[in-house]
Image 1 (cartoon, rainbow, N blue to C red):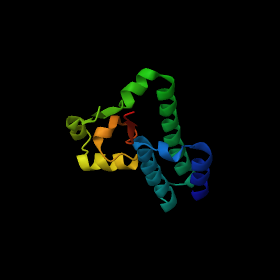
Image 2: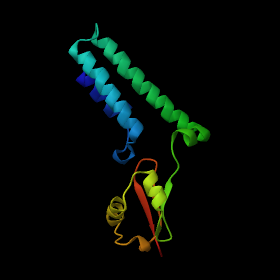
Image 3: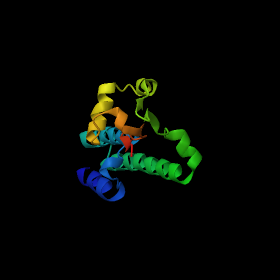
Image 4: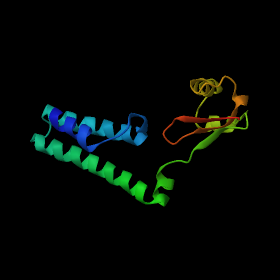
Amino acid sequence: MYLFLFVLFRVVVKRRVGAVGMGDILVLVIIADAAQNGMSGDYRSITEAFILVGTIVGWNTLIDWLTFRFEWLQKVLEPPPLLLIDNGRVLHRHLRQEFMSEADLKTKLREHGVSDPREVDKAYMEPDGQVTVLKKT
């Protein structure tokens, strides 16, 4: 089972580290549960676990491909970037929408070399949870 998962994640599922989203984490948890059942003997054979894990990865790959291929599906399944700062003004309503405190936002700004929100032209919460900061020129 270990070798199967190793090959699966090294060869089949190729992701950049920064591109891991909530959907990927969900799939990883489901695969971990399916693989655990295969290793503990809950299935009649380890082949059943291979088939289940392969099916989960296959569906995930299909959904990723479909969202890449069809823009309307991507709009349905992935949220658009959310504006957090506009021309130096913090949009508190949008922070509340993401359950993000102003202290959390300032931490993200410091990661981008910004000490004050007034230095920012625009800041967005991206669909993967990262904060993009565009400084004023």
